Each structure stands twice: as C-alpha cells, then as structure tokens.
Length: 187
Image (tube, rainbow, N blue to C red; front, side, top):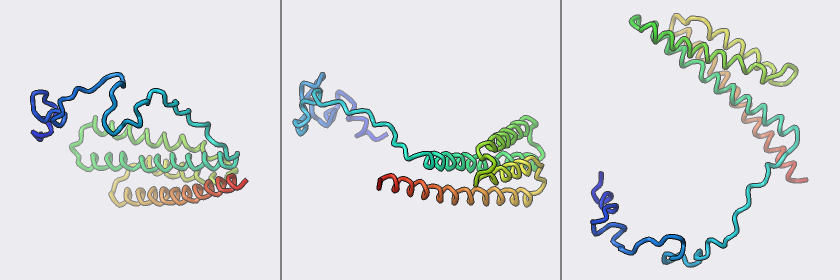
C-alpha cells in the first residue's frame, strides 16, 4: 500500500488530515471555509418525494409490457446455451465426475424450464404470438444430446439469430414508446 496514503490516517503523522490539526466540529455548528452559503443547512426544506409515474395510456403500458417480456425471453435464450456447452465439454472429456455432469444437467433442465415458462407471456392472437413457437422449438432442440461441436454450433447460431431478432424488435418497440410519449406531450 502507498505509504503516503496510509500516513494521512495515522494520527501521529504530521500529514494527518493534510497537516490541519483543527478538530472536526460535530452537530453542524462550525462551517468549513468556502461553505458559508450552506451554514443554515438544517432549515432548508426537505425535498419532496418524486411524483407518481406518468401514465401514457393503455397502449403504452401494453407495448412496455411486451418489450419487457421480449427482454426476459432474450435473457432466457442467452442463458440456455452455456449449460449445454458445459455438459457437452464434460462428456467429451470422458473423465468428468458424475456429480459435475449431474450439476450441468440440472442447469440445462432449469434453463429449459425457465424458457418454457415464458410461453404465456405471448398470448395467442397477438403480433408476438409466433414467439410461442420459437420458445417451444428452441426448448425442444435444447433437450437433445449434442454429440458433435458442429451440431451444438448450429443450435447456438439459431439461438443467436433469435436473440438478434428480438433485439431489433425491442428497438422498434422502444421507438413506438417514444412516439407515444411525444404524442402525449403534444396534448
């Protein structure tokens, strides 16, 4: 550690508190030089709590919820490949412990379950209902045992394509949210 840094906290060292021996006042009665304007800080008004969030209407709320759901789906898709890859690498080693394989298998099952739980976030009859098929398809493919790195890479590429598409959809929805806000501001 830097000796100069340590010395500033040593009460017996001449550079303690920058060499200023003046004790620090307590209770707000003494005001440091340069802060005289804030001398009466105790009488300043307490800042009000932030106001309630502004509502931009049901369309905004619906678009916001869909965008959030897409973000959760994108995260779930991103989380599905690592345990599959780790499991594949453990099996390729050959000397992996059964416990390590079981741990990674459980992570894989959890990731698939988390993905499948998102189906309900995309109701039938909405423009994002096709995401239900994407979720089911990816979950089904994730359940297989990937025997070769090439088959896993194909799967990982498919997942990456879906996450990229979701990113672009989120971007479009963000623009829609901004338009709704602008329209509300003009009223």
